[in-house]
Image 1 (cartoon, helix red, strand yellow):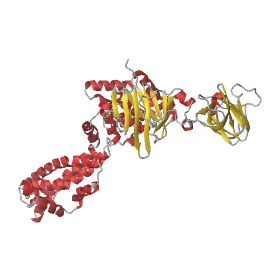
Image 2 (image 1 turned 120 degrees about the horizontal axis):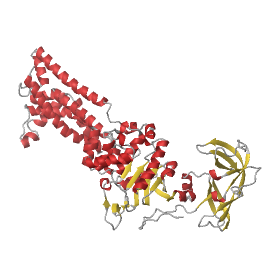
Image 3 (image 1 turned 90 degrees about the vertical axis):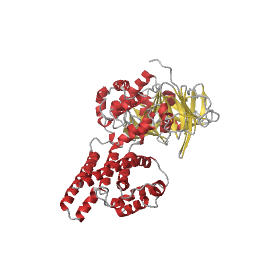
Image 4 (image 1 turned 180 degrees about the vertical axis):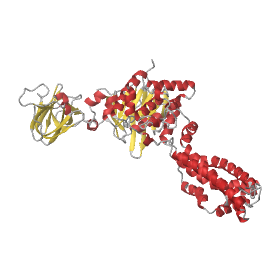
Length: 234
Length: 387
């Protein structure tokens, strides 16, 4: 077991998750609430990293972070072959999952509930914090978990932008690749087991969230019969 | 609770792709029913009052507070919904599903100790205190709507708007809520506007009724006045009046009027202003006020004026009354009678019977269309329609 790779992976995934939430949630809210020309194109571009080969994503990232990019030329920020580059790669591949899941959840919140809140004297920020986000929380949490799991497991693009420097940029997936190349199968077995366990727990949690009996019922399903009520009013 | 009687004044216009809304209303502490078919603009009117929809022009004023104003020469005002804070009850309750009943009601009052106590008192008032900690999905539809009403009252607004609020509920629950609503209105002196497309609901709660059609008010007045004197044939049809007859006025005398209807003389009470002799008028005869005449008994005062003869072509039991259709000449006349009436009379299909009705049962429709013209905005609040 390569502990430095394990801790580096956690560090990268944690920072990436924070970025995924802070970029993904406002973006999802915006996409769920507005309609503008070219929205479909933007959404498609945001989804692209899900299906593009990791090497293609990695190549784009090399262009975006490498010599000649605005980041380097204007701001003199050099990320390539350091762990923050792994964070960038993880964010790019994790964001689509976060956006997709939370956007759907936010769009599903009944606008009448927000209207009701408005007539009850609530401002837009209060509506967001007390009505919209709580009602969409399952989809948002699912998106965060999926995005974080994807960030933790990122391999291809990461390899291209960080290289494979043990102790500095070698994340767990890269360490597994390394171990297999060097035929250190015992090492690889353990790390594969750890990755599988983390992924399993994450996905299991998401499934449980979706199936929870306490899940918010859509208004149409709320309509039930009223026999009970007649008994109560007397 | 003594409070100055609230007054809500609404005069708005708004163009939609398929509808031009032009509504004028003045509502005091009362229950006003907005009645009309779907698409008539009832919900839009409520939304405009609550601030969920912005009219193109007009004024919405509650007492001294201008909710909305867009008029040439006057400063534009458009308070956002949260500053109008009117009680709004939606058809499907729109309770917050992730909050308990108490938290829902405490949403406008604030979730501190005082707000929660106030919310609890409102739940007690709605007989729901024992369910305060249930979530909406653990409540029946009727209970949910009570929570929604309590939540709307918690805004402490003198206005309570109900948008088809009870239409998803079963009849017994609905009856109970109608009774509660009438009590609440009287208790708190609320301005209640109750939107429905259901005539029974309109009669169950309303004191005054505004009949909407295609974005405009066809007639507004007390239920009694509107039923007695429908402004036009559309209103009469919407109120479910059947037995339309068209005839020519042949004589007018004091408070009596005679019509020639396909050669039959019909006596009616004369509306004011009286139609001129020779003019064509439309009239309705209430189906439940038409009697069958026993051939072997003396005529009662109910039937000694308009006696007609016809053949029974259909009969069907109704919810409250039994219905018989009689063909008089070429016109079908509907008669509704109590289940146990006419047991000594053969009312099977094909029988020829005599029918009669009092002159008071004939409702003459004025020729001029709307009683209140809503084409032009009026400067002064309109006064209540009086007959």
